Structures are given as structure tokens and as C-alpha cells.
Amino acid sequence: MLGGEQKPKEYLRLLELAALNSESDVESAIRLLLTSGTRPGPEAVESLLTRTVEVPALTTSPVDLKTYDLLLTSREDLPA
Image (cartoon, rainbow, N blue to C red; front, top):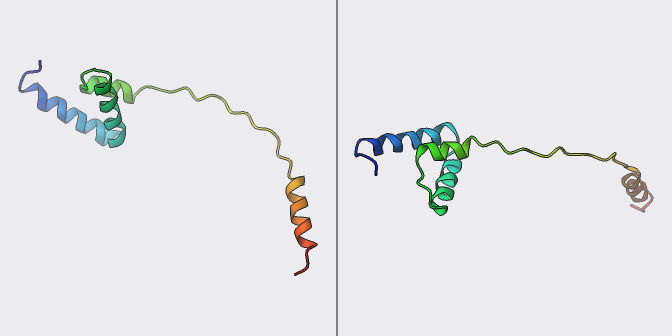
């Protein structure tokens, strides 16, 4: 259990994390910790905020605009 003086410091640290990051991210981190049964202290919240997610490399295919060009050409052939 936290001492009476430690609780306000932790709350202020949570507010600081919200100001430096995103309020909604901090809220989500707190909810996640509470749902998992973990105490949502500033250290636990910060560890969730600083996690990096590896984004997979994206591959692209060449774009063939011939079909689109055909649509435009066929529209030009229509009577006005």
C-alpha cells in the first residue's frame, strides 16, 4: 500500500504522462492495466506507452491505369 505522500506524486506523474503523450493513450493504458488486475502506477502506464510496435513492411504492385483510361474513353463516346 502506498503512503499518503506517495499517492499525490503518482497521480501527478500520471497527469504528466497524459500531458506529454495523449490523454486517451494514458486512459487506455490504465484501463488495460485495471482489466488485467495490475496496479496502474505511473511506471506500468509508462511502460505501455513506450512500447514499440513493429509495423510489417508493405509491398506495392505496379498500378495499371488502362482500365481506368477505358472508362474515361467510353464516357467521352456518350452523347451529351
